[in-house]
Length: 151
Image 1 (tube, rainbow, N blue to C red):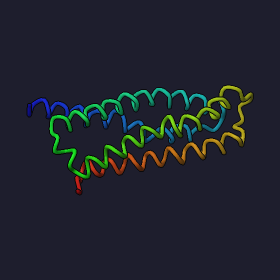
Image 2: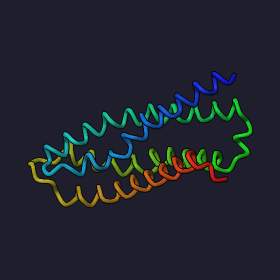
Image 3: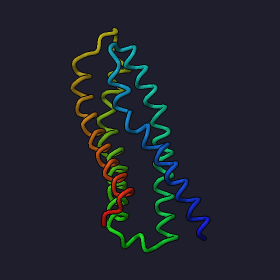
Image 4: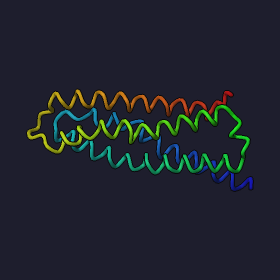
């Protein structure tokens, strides 16, 4: 059982690197676009990186719960429960907050003619990026809790 737990911990840490690493730069990737052509390309790269985030995030949840199943005392530790609640909240932000705010941006990218970036994009993306930054802060808190296990 100890070997299985160590394997799950390894997968959990690897998944955090695979999923959260790219997640922290999703906003940065698209901020570098200076024209619509560059912006569209940046969003294509962002989409490819987001696949890593989704796979890593799914593995994080599965392995985190598996560790709790193998070691039920984790469910009595504040850092574990808080991390789990924050992670579920961060997952919910995707479809409930980010997706509705990214649809107008995607529509603008698909329909705008010309290579200039319209002011509307900057307004829409500013709101989207604020929520993405909030999500990154949540993930930083989770990482801190996992490392320090303060309570």
